[in-house]
Length: 188
Image (cartoon, rainbow, N blue to C red; front, side):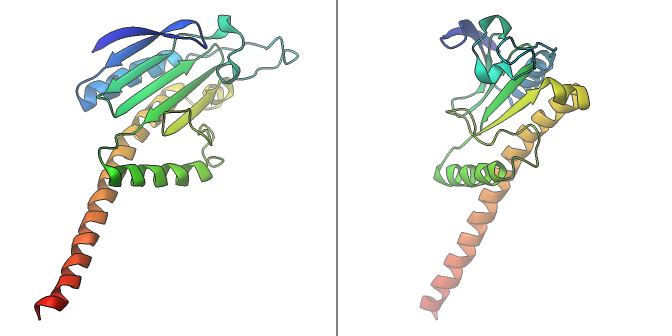
């Protein structure tokens, strides 16, 4: 993996960029970054009367923010991990090689977005430029195992790729069956 830095103007930190060439290398790099990002601690806000709030969502206290990490696998697939002292946001861009994959990914993400309340960590609206985003708070890492949360995000990434590929094959085979049935009426 190759790491490069790019300045994030909203945060004031250099964004670490990692390029992975294989699926397993990509997932391993994401897993390592998530383990670091999910090491959260309590940080009462001065603006919210001492209550915890997701600093990564507000980004108005630069001292609480960590440098974001962007892990890419080619141009079409990436993971942005932004973290603060008490929260972390993971945004995923799913591979969309053609128009059919774009449509399938968009519909699948809309489906998930409508059910965001059922997934405690899923954001209803993803970060701009990404297909799906997760928001993890300190309360999530306290009530659930942080290692299990890391495993969930990595497994979600694997499953979403697999699901879109399976849906694409299914649509293609149905299209082939319809075309065959349609053309049979002209060959009789």
